Image (tube, rainbow, N blue to C red; front, side, top):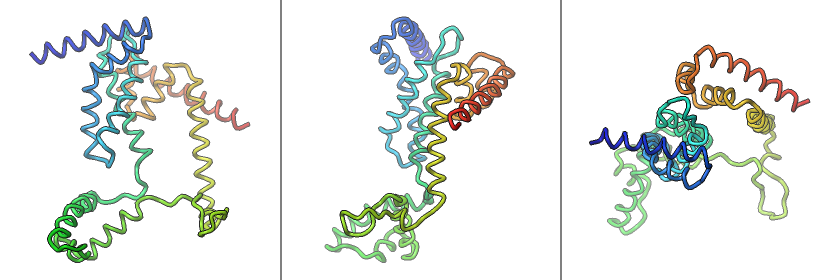
Length: 258
């Protein structure tokens, strides 16, 4: 029964994909998304326990990857759409988590204790009819007061301060934190962001297949063999396109700088 359902799903997806590629009707694309949304749910379930992002946010991000896969899928290659779509869905979620990732890593145990502390604090407040002390919370959690203080401090310092944050109480003050704490690395960060934008613009100028090879290898962390199987080409061709694509990217970016 399950096998038959999967076969019907595959057949319906391919039929809709063929119709969408001929008409580019958004309604058909949305239907393909609905039929294959289980792929997004599976990836979201995998990542939700490894990050602090909500399940709904991961579903939305994964859906973008699914749509990208629909736009790039080639029926003539004969690949299963699900196998083609999963790297796009996974890659979109991974990029989102990298961009949203906290620069200050907190041990998972501390994150779990901080989560438990909310319920502990509520129960102690109801029992004691007052706000519990740090020592009482730590005792209830089964940890030392010092460790509890470290957990609170880690959460407090988790998000970095913006160097553009105004300093002082004067609303008209133009002094920012960056002015008071000059750091050459701030300029390096700005340059890195500019390089990233130039790279994205240069990628868009590459031939479609070459761009796909570079994205799969360097953005989705696939091996050359996996890319070859996914695109229906040889590993040698993947290697050649990588070399060619990297050379073109270098020339394009150098041209923009000049």
